[in-house]
Structures are given as structure tokens and as C-alpha cells.
Image: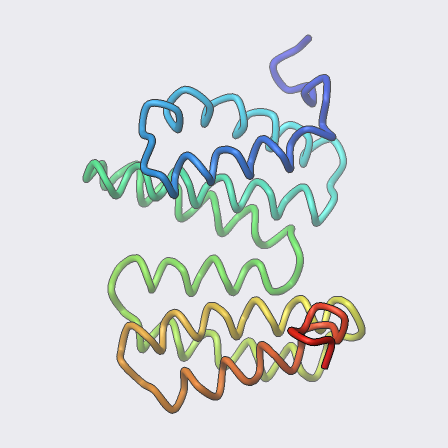
Length: 179
């Protein structure tokens, strides 16, 4: 198979990315180092082949793992490259993904207020441009990123407002007690 061809089982990409993130959350560095190159290559090749927003979202999510690994080891040039590649992928992904990636860069660099300002601008735009499922997904993920940033600057009022907004945009059937 040529190096730029999608993997033989693109349906496995969501599971592989989830497993990679599980290794990341458990800080299993050897597993992350072993799996990351293959997941990144497969996700990128599939995204180029399909041009699907979902596929590009997976590429952006994979680059967040690259950033995490690079930052953990203080490989700052690689960390900067990962942020740049994540943004490029996010621009082709779902509308909220680019903003989440950009706000994540502010979060990772310690500029929590700057990231919160970006999220706030994106929320205003999403409220006026997104509809149905995209609106619920986009606003939910933006408010979750805002919740993280508000927590870092210890802004309880903003945190509570964002938590309420996340709940508001959650589908009724997914809410605790179905309310």
C-alpha cells in the first residue's frame, strides 16, 4: 500500500484513537510512543482521502496527543509544530474544532483568559450560525473548553454558567433522569 493511502480498516480509527487517548490518560508513555505514529498516519491519510469533517477532527485530536507528548518531554519545537498541525486539521473539521484547538493552545501555554476570550467569541458565532445537531455539539464542546479555562483562572461564576450551558445543549435523552 502506498504511504499516502488510507489504512486498510478506516472504521477502526475511532477505536484506535480512543485507545491512544486511554494510554495518554493513564500516562503509559511506551504505549503512546508505539501507537501514535500509526494512528497519526492512518488518520491523516484517511482525512486526505475522504475530506470528511469527522476525519479531520480525528487528525486534530491525534495532534493533541502529539502536543501532550512533546510538552511532557519539553520538546518545544515539536510541541509548536503539533499545535500548528492541529490548527490546520481543525480548520477542515467541524466548525467548533478549530476554536477548541486554538483555545487548547492558550490553555496549554497558560494564557487561560486569552483562551476564554476566544471561546466566548466562538460561542457568539456558533449561536448565530449553527443549527440542530451541529449547534448542540459545537456549543457543548465550546462550553466544556470554556469550563476548563474558567476553572484554571478560578472564575466560579463563569464556570457555573458554562456548566449550565453544557447541560442546556445536551440532548434530553442524555441528561441525568431524562430531563
